[in-house]
Length: 425
Picture (spheres, rainbow, N blue to C red):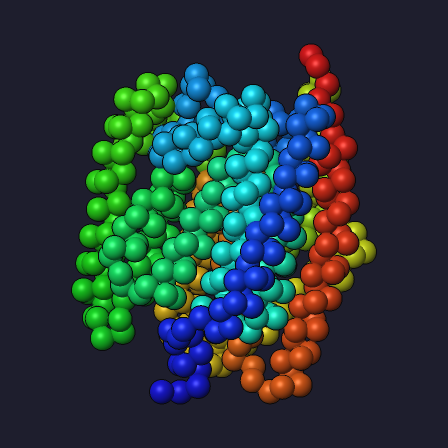
């Protein structure tokens, strides 16, 4: 077996006690950061729909913690209420505040996403130092800082995606793992069903032929749909206001979120914008501005027309991140890392989201949680192909500078979020 082929071989978790300590520290650190930001938003009355990037904060607070909320968006988030409301309602009973309960649960899941990302890196053989740096990089992205703090469905989606990839690395081909993990991921976001099928398919043992691999992956997909259908009916009985994801009429309203593809020029503009988000802006926030089209209810947006919208620290971070991505491309091609199941799964999931959001989506920042982890994980795992000690130290040093520059840049992004105040109509 070649060195490249052995990079992501399943192995016992190294340094389990030190790793556990780092995981707990990351969980508590980012839970605290996200909780602080979320509570600052609650104090300013901005935990409402369309205050930031057209996100549905108010609706999701209802889904998580309000007992009599309508729950009408379960057509695209099929089991979200069933998965979160029991915990959110319990927290609401203790705190006497649904928004506080939703922020508490959402920020906990945000902290968990960072810890799970670090765990994923560790079980794929990344050093503890680099795993911690990679987790810090993910936790401090514009995506995680916002969606880990403001109650939305996307941070839950991120956790479910990481869980799928942990399965691809640790439990390849295990039906008993991928069926519940797939239901979790699909239940949070309907399009994540494709990611569950992809991660399971690539995880199957190499001797399994492509026809059988595709058949087994398709069978998993059908099983996820079947079990989710039953659970959606149970959810409907408990919360009659929830919708059923398999009703064609329930999905028809999503047509309003399709991208404008009337000309090739519009398609090209959409793709260029999507790539700016996926490659840079989802990680490193550009300058923000307030959309004053509705003066009584301003909405915070980010400037996305050009990479020049990045502040000075953001440009430093973007240059380093861009360099690491180019290195990952070269290493992936040179060492044929795309033949490795985990790397192949990451690349296919990135491609899946690029295709999906070329065709569908409103504010593209809303979908950042679906690509930030897969992009960061692909880059970090690809860099494991570099074995020379001096180059390894250089890479880790660049990652450290990247995390610092990213943090310095995204502080301004967070300040813009918490400076917003709700203006009564």
